[in-house]
Length: 494
Image 1 (cartoon, one colour):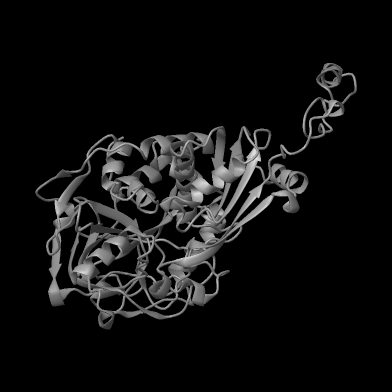
Image 2 (cartoon, rainbow, N blue to C red):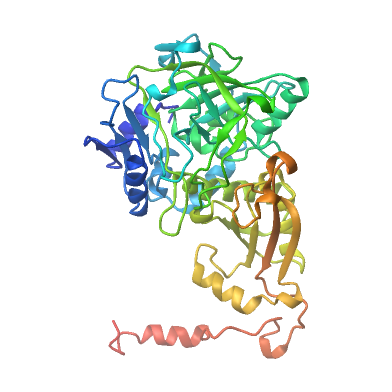
């Protein structure tokens, strides 16, 4: 379908009845965030706020949120009909994540319509929301795609990382060296005693955020994979003050440097995080010193209400449900794990819990699944709890999975395996603060769990069980069932 900018995406959503323009005046201070939360609870439309208090004549006047807030809109973004199934989307993601079309450098683009340099930069000229009442400030980077470059290979990386407005021209961020690709870049710059160049891209093709929020392999640029998704090279332009390339038709690009010297850090947090909890505590953190902002005329600030709870989950959750399942399936395939039939990650956990269906081929099959996932870099902040089921269980159906866990799991006979003190997510509130001290440990710490809900092969086959290792279920025989189906109308049950 070709690359599309944010305005083309909004036009597509309008044609599909999937966006609502809010013309009533709203306050950037918590009201935008609360509206977004209530709409997410109802699986409602994407929102374009066009009348924001204090910003009627400002440099930026609009905020767009919720673009991929439902599975239907994710399907549209990927080029599918709105009723595409989970399996269709996951299989497509598995395929496209392994393809690449490199970007093409162009001389200029709409993102260069306005160039603001140095002391003239004031990030609060844009209607940056304070999304939640307990947050530490106004978060400009909630759905921004952060571009950095590996100083050794010169390959760019694009990721989604939170960032709060500090001073008028600074953005303190949550930067984790241990698992995030930009954190690995930052560690290399720090070893050299150099500041890391950064570009924050706000508002472009919806697939940019879909890929930036997913752990593609190190050394693979998300813009290359995005080109494969769109079957067209991404048009990029050079930044003004940093050695990076960004999409030519983005709404905004914020350029700057992060100094590894802790004396340059500014306080960031807390933030209403994807876990559904308000994260950590206000902490001095690495800070983007902004050197330039380029933007389109009348730019649209792209942001999102983060945080997932039952019945109310975010864009990040919808993205993760597809990407984390597709990435897990590719990990299992590349590691030679046989018999994988389906992989599902429910949106509410963003892939913290992962459900795998297999055609069981040996007793330790479920452990091989868990080992492959936990040993991969994509498991840094996901796959904390791995549930493995056999071919007769639908891993998108909680009732079926609950039944299998109840009657096929025996904790004393290998049904539950705990893998202690592995690398984990620094935002998981179930982990004590001292065990997710990023500055000291490099990442959070997890005790990972495998729940093997497959039937044990340690049992002997029995003739009374049709020569199987497990008793038969209470389903009627095929002949008895067919008899009843054939006489159904006679019973008066139609």
